[in-house]
Length: 275
Image (cartoon, rainbow, N blue to C red):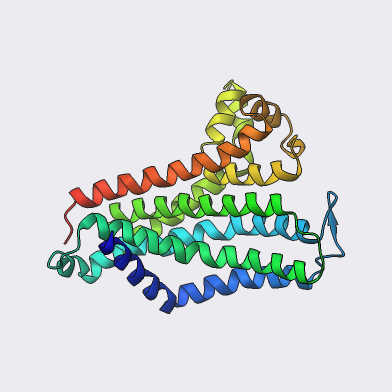
């Protein structure tokens, strides 16, 4: 455990010095600031005002920005160290492969999640100072949703990084994964599947295998429990999970997907040719 935390600390220090982290922090802090500037207390969307309206908008923007940031920066981790010859020094030090690999994940997770959470927490504290009602239930669920979102794409990124043999290949694969997930967003292919006489339950189940779709639908379910905006797809989703069940599924499935992806990445990394 000591080796793991030392590796995590080293990754955190390196990330704090990196330019991508400065941009990453500025983006999410800037989003919250802009949402306040454009009128936190004077706007209304579907009956949501004040901080509720900000959180609804913030989570939608985060789902578009966070995955690509996490994937592109994470895939450079193992692949970049392989190109830099770090593994040759690693094998000469009393640091196990497990401690190094999982320590990188722990350190990168802290760096990725902290700016996103602090931006949302800052909005909440400012709302409290301005005597604006804080929807703590929504804040808590969105925090959990962001936590598992970061975990999910961090695990996928580490898997890609362990497979790719160069930084360029890793970044290209990460972009293709993100693009493929976007193509399945909003249940885009459901119409084609149903026209091909695929059962609606099967089509929607395949669509919900996409973590981006799971996150977006869960965010919608918090202020639209009947998922009216999804049309007929909502009936299948609610019949399968129920409103509460789907919210739980939206937290469990991405977290499991991230952990499983990271574990597969570690197995491949351990069996692979490190140099």
